[in-house]
Image 1 (spheres, rainbow, N blue to C red):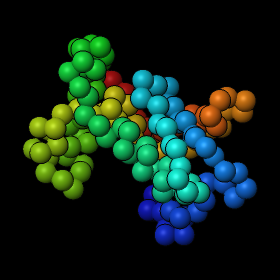
Image 2: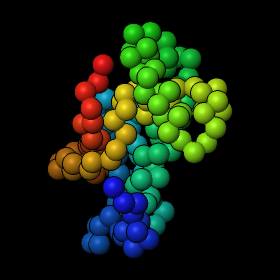
Image 3: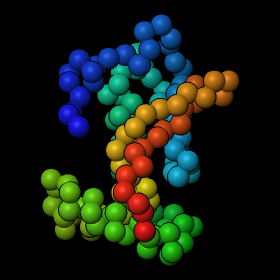
Length: 135
């Protein structure tokens, strides 16, 4: 997969619609909806940045407790793999702790957005790749 070109990153999400708010939800990570309240016309890069900013947040102690030990344990391998795959220090990332994206258990590749017509606030569903079978 090739990175987005400058032209693709700066492409407007919509040429003829001004959004007051966009809400993006992933079924697995529905506890953390992505809300974009634009101050300008929304570009593709704005959507990707909002996704990253929302899902790169480390899980709090309360969230870890709410999710339960079993779910956290099932996500551990994806967490460690993400830390190894990053250009940042593996040790630094491991010390920061598991993030929301790790709960997808390795399914981190953006596949698309599905618009839910009639839903409030221009709601979209965020789809990630299916990837290899999860354990």
